[in-house]
Length: 180
Image (cartoon, rainbow, N blue to C red; front, side):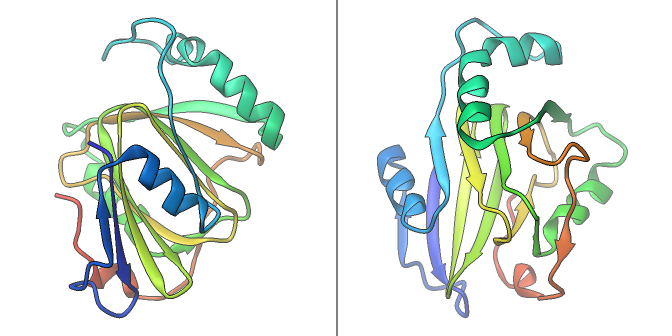
């Protein structure tokens, strides 16, 4: 189930807000410039669906976002718990970083946790199947896929080169609870 927990940046033990309500999550994130939506596929997709089948199932929503935001590249990413590089990949995303463009992810299956360091707060967003999150360009954040990752997500980019991170060097991510 999707969830949002908000903490002060300097106290990961103090919960300022915790909600599983999709509308409340969308409102709270919209207040800080983050897009959060729930999508539905227009056809059945399963664990063995190809990237082309997945993109076709969400074609209308993808085209809407491309038209609204000018995204030029769309792909899918999948990661399973039996991937031999899972620990290395998890570490790559666990450090606070920014991007020169929005980081847009739509979860087709599985789940993951985004941590957004915005202003003096950290927004922990548990994203699950049917969740779209768009983290604005230059926003400090990190992502945790957990120790046993199992997800597929659609990614949209303005930059044809795809995912390019600029690490902040801040150790804040080490202070907050990991996604287990």
